[in-house]
Image (cartoon, rainbow, N blue to C red):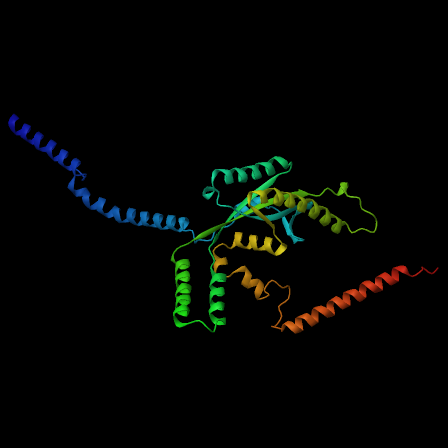
Length: 310
């Protein structure tokens, strides 16, 4: 009897050891329950993986929260500046970089000295804004197409080469997301109305804009002068350029198809929708508007010079 119990104990221990090593349930009747629960876990894992892939996809449009943190309470764009509440203004300057690591040590030293000199000379805050955009080859492709169309003396081999280049550029751009980095310097300034000497005849808004523009433009010119020694070109952005930066910040994916330059070219930025007009008619209308403005100013000037009758 003892031998039988010993054999049964050894068999049971061997069964348990075998099932544990094979990572299977000890009781066979529980296999069906375990098998039924596997598809649910698999479906859940696939759902999580799909959600993660969507979040990691660089083509998915996301809200530009960082840009809102950089520029809260935006009022508008005017006179080459971004205006915020409390008379705070920001001027944008785009910086063309240099390839630092392709320069020899002497040229690198010149670049370092130019940057260090500019940083040591400023006593006001300057922010650096880097914007990644999808590479857009629309303008180079249009230039090649225009050259091929305007050149009547091209032979068949040259024309075929140009057409193949256009196809290769379009395929390269569609192959995968490719980015280019734009670099901007942001100069901030807040106008204190108490420091302005305003006469009764002065327009307060005009004086505020003049004060902000003169101060910020001085800072941009100082940066341009210092960084030019290191071959870093600094270009002041116009009002249209600032709006383009904002457009690409909030429409990075859509901007590749709906280009800002096309929106401007099709006059979609106008306050009023108008039909297509010829250049001569547009010039004539503008001339009439300017003539009317000049007449109104002349009437106001004459009325101010007339003596006041009692």
